[in-house]
Image (cartoon, rainbow, N blue to C red; front, side, top):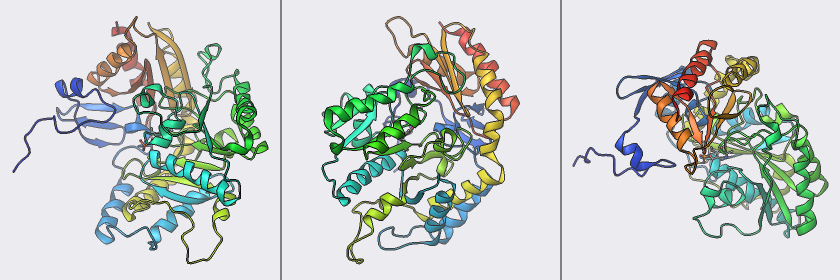
Length: 436
Ligand SMILES: Cc1ncc(COP(=O)(O)O)c(C=O)c1O
């Protein structure tokens, strides 16, 4: 029996379902920088899908690799069995990760990568005889996916408040968004001292109770909050001093988004673990990963060798098709020099964004790499409405942006050309002009 041709069965994620179903926005194909809609309109993708299609859409190498792999080895169990591409991809990831981060644990998403990293942190301390280190520290306005660990350390109120008491023993650092840093290009000057709040939490709880601190090097989903100069360095210093693990959630910042393989490279700060996903497979096949230090990994590699060292994993950890997509994606980034390209384009991208500062309702513009945010003055008594209006109008005008709160956030594919940057700027100017 055919399903009825209506839209009600699909309960859409992070979507205003009733609004969408009253006026659907359907994407039916994509290539390079563009989507096409069911009404055959071209839409310029200024968000790389959801911060993931870093190499642009339907890139031939990736498409072919997935097609070939699914016909050759569709699935292989991940527990007690292996397939060559999982090892090859892990080695390739370790090779581009910061020095010392040498071991890759596969997941299917950023959320799962976060849960995995938090669990590894707890189990690591236990393995080292410090089982009292169970406290996890996140940051206000942080986004670490939607599973229980992630929303517990996360600091986006709407993602937490209706879901009960969450994981116990979690605390939060203050966010790094200061009004005096408005209109900054790149990293802001003020706020490195906000990292010192970790010393307050250490004094409050005792370092011997704290397992890990997790932060996004650049907070993305909350609306692009940049790390003040010196902030991440200070966080690294304090965590190291107290034996606390530092986790960088690089689900958005990984794979060239800030002009380097990882934000850890860009900012010159090496954490103990990196979580990643999205750009890992160019968004083609779901995949995430935790890249852990040898120090962490090796702490598990003892005891009788027939025993499982870490009781954790997913049916789809490192599937052949995801690994094939990952390898072809890394090839594409390398062959096209996309990480370097981001560095080259960063200034021109920033010029376009900051050129919009004179538009009505714009109260801040911020950027780094190929990430940009335009913050709007919320409508009196109706937060988020103005930005949502901008999102809808931009789509009508052939431009896909993302909004969060009253912030327009953009993260185009790294293959973007000057003509696309210009088109984004012109379209946004029209959109901002038309806003209430
Ligand atoms: C920093 C960060 N962590 C985790 C996630 C969750 O990833 P996923 O949606 O793949 O579960 C995201 C998604 O945007 C993210 O930005």
